[in-house]
Image 1 (cartoon, rainbow over the protein chains, first blue to last red):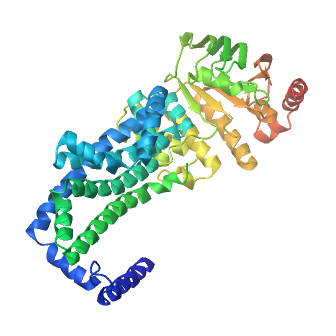
Image 2 (image 1 turned 90 degrees about the vertical axis):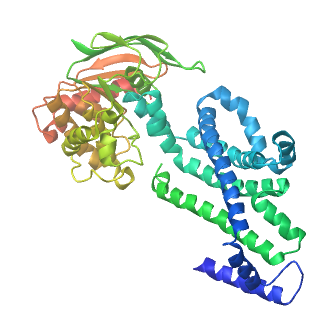
Image 3 (image 1 turned 180 degrees about the vertical axis):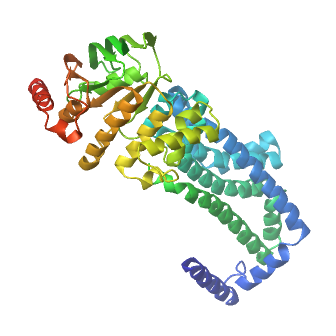
Length: 243
Length: 250
């Protein structure tokens, strides 16, 4: 409720600033919303959205499939943790955007580059949080499972991963947020596909209503993804608090 | 015939600290034996070596006459901090040992329900550990150990995080339960009264490096009621005797 109110205040301010014609790059809020309503059902938005969602999903999927097992391995095998720990820590804070031009040279100007960008944006924080979660998993639970004859695979599936689930989900949420940045930045730099192409077209042709409408849609998407994972986190929180 | 026997057990940690030196003990079948000593005497280490949870530096552990080098289905452990899965209900926690063995869900839950009732937690099957008191959590831990039907129960200071009133009741229930099930129990505690009250045999450990300094058999008449035992001559003498030995260590 509070959040809606604050959003409403901002929308009104935006509208007033737009009407006052402070700057040509800032059209009134209502005009932007109109543009958004026009944009969403259009064919060019659909194809852009599909290609963007596909790149995002593929990149995220790869980040999960690589990131979670790697984080587990780093926590459980000391040598792997030592060898990779430094690199993961460097890359988690590094500006990955700077690597995109290199990716373009290696992978070409296309979807692959965008998928890899999403992957690189998302994977490191997932690795790091998984590692933290597994490292801090309750040792006496591990001992308990061993004393009752747990096999190695059972130790992971029935104790370690569940015990680390709150941290893993936090990593996935942060990774997904970074992944949204990754897909937009990747497409902007590649500039000929998906939402990036639309952004490029709108700003080059000074179509500010459409430009801002697209910004709003991307923001909403990022927020929705993050909220969906946060909802999942809340479901496991009841035991995170009791560890 | 002793159910568990340890011979020449030695434990030296990676940092060079010698925790146990030449420990020899035998634990008779169907009896409750206590490892008693001041903190840092290695009693929990010894128990975990018997459980196969930590590696020993020397010596051997014989279970039913056979040397063992890891956990086994004939031994079940009750943990000081309960070690319950916080995301699982009481029912699933109690059935967890059987779940790990791959028993199908319906069967293992039937078995678990029976032991949940035996430890006095009927009606709490669907609760989560954080909804239970410390005493109730440890009852879950005990039920879990009973559910796998091990002949030997290893208990690591199971009552240390349980408040005093609950502890007495729990001790009485424990004696009843174990006598009924004919278990061989190895029990770690630092409480002299608890050891004297519960045990058939008490092994006193000296501190650093831990070694067996004395074995005491309280000889308390188990047919008496709990209150009679607590006023029993033999019980009081045992407490006194142990205190005189342990006083040298503190």
